[in-house]
Image (tube, rainbow, N blue to C red; front, side):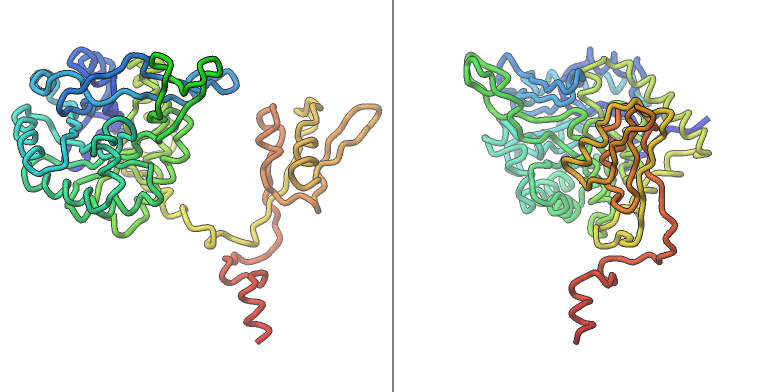
Length: 424
């Protein structure tokens, strides 16, 4: 059996599946249910000076019949008193000592505020803290959340304060609402952060109510931008996790991956691209806490099949293959192949290639029936036909053995810079 235990910057848990700081981790009742279901850890919903939340807080995108393909919220940090939250943290940690319990924090940007709350959190016996530098709505307008996370100097400053005033591991939660995720991450590293977690939600307007002419979700006829999450943000998050995993200036920090994780396969991808564990929110809000059972079983079975004994056997394995565009093989060739026995003759591959791609699929009539065939010399191997085909496995992409060596753009004769040099 695969060993799923993790040691994330000194915080031990029986598996890499944590619940992210959000409504599912708002109180003792929820967290107890989560631990009973099998979650390896939780990050408690962000604690700070209590605020007032509005009603009508969530919105969702449905895509091709898939509910909650994207999800947004305009909920802020915990609206319960700090002492109530921390009392429940202390109780749950005492009752579940083998589970990871991290407390998310957000207070005004002055050292004394952080010093005070850190001492209170330490008294609970929590395993660590997560600094919420990512919330893109509500709190950012008050000089907190992403208003801090978007300024590397602030990230470094507050992180350094926290490392100065606590013995607990410090995890910095990063905002994706920035041009280059490496800069705030490097700032966290300079402030001696133990780890970063990413991504927090994307600033977004999920839709417009065309009757009231206001953004969704509606609050008495008006709306605002919120934080976007769910399966739709996974590609953005994977890119950012990978960017940090391969950045030499971020080396030495742990990475907790967040964003659109719904299955064991999603989690395995995050681990492969450099994350040390993962945090889940939207999928649990969509289907409940017991989804972790399938995640644990699925990851264990996959690891057994691959011969991986521990998570470290494949953790970060994809990082070495995540390169810049200019490092790709310019001589690599693939062409599409259509399995005529599986083809249902819908013609979608032909239409999309003819209209929007490279006119490399011919529409024929053979024995009075429609038939679609690839024109090899026109096919550029873009993959479009494979993705639009409604039948799994009907269209595949096959490598062409052209005998050409691996050539990157800098060395490619087709590079204009090389043609200029040759002419000289």
